[in-house]
Image (cartoon, rainbow, N blue to C red; front, side):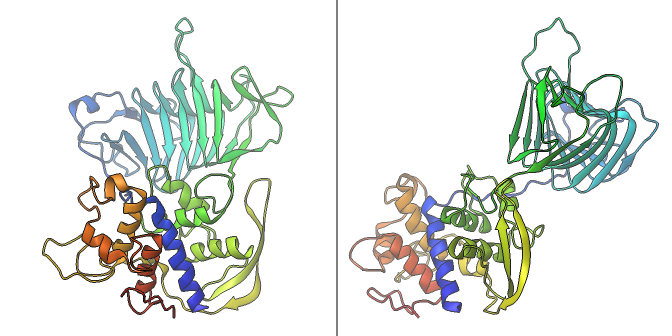
Length: 443
């Protein structure tokens, strides 16, 4: 079993390298940047308090709201309650991103939560529980995008709404876009005859769908019940195929390749890390992408649902064809006990080439004097992105003639190929003893 697992990892790593090695992605700090004079006069207010350079780090002095001018981000980081406040809690006249940094509860039953004359984006890892008169409002022409967000909204009028100050002015259309979000809206009957979502010209649902009610219709810029009445309660749930990293609607080996790229932080620009960490989090949902997720997904692809690796319980489960979620997941009572060696360790670190000249050795493609994972990476980069990393590539770290020579370790004499990259990886995880030409004896 140990040998099998090593071969699985080596093969997946080799395939991972086919797309080259883009720059790593990184997280952004939510700490507030100093405000310029222009930003201080932007018209953003929280509970009637105008954001300034002095208060942007803690706008109300209670640690809940802060603002970062650089990203235009207002962060919600805790609970806020004011049952007497009867205006709009957050107002803005510039594009505004609201980040829910942690689970937070906002209780303002007599007030609206946020109103903007421009676009609003809502995202974050925390869940927002909101009790309000109105939820998220944009002026006609503005758009609202809800990304990877968990919202629980109890509203007395609307949850998402377009307003228009003057009917005589023709403005662009507005779109409400939900992306991979989990949203529950509870409305209350009122005299307006309006639904809790209204005013938008377009509604988009990406990797999520309206779970309840099952039947509804779009009428007069509103989502209405199938009979045309007020639609007050609404549930929007994520909808995806587990493990479908590349978003093509199915799970296969290409997704395994994409997952390994995510695990070593070398994602191409067209892959969304927020999406991947949700569809790839299979084994123990909520703990992020782990080695166990990788092996469970690989085993599912290879053996139709029998995960193995380490002391992992064998699970049985089926795939719900309606919404792409696992169902009937349960342990069988069996355990597979093998090595708990860390997958991430097999990748090693990508180390920059030193300035000092070093002695050449077989497998040292980068010329830094050691055989490491970056040598296998460089081979695949030079083959898949020759303009950047080939012999005449524009990148400073492109392959050299010397690197090509010492990288030809498998079937020496036919030039570098993906097989050479795989041979180097086998050497790194001790599946071959040496990289001297013609030595390819697997353990």
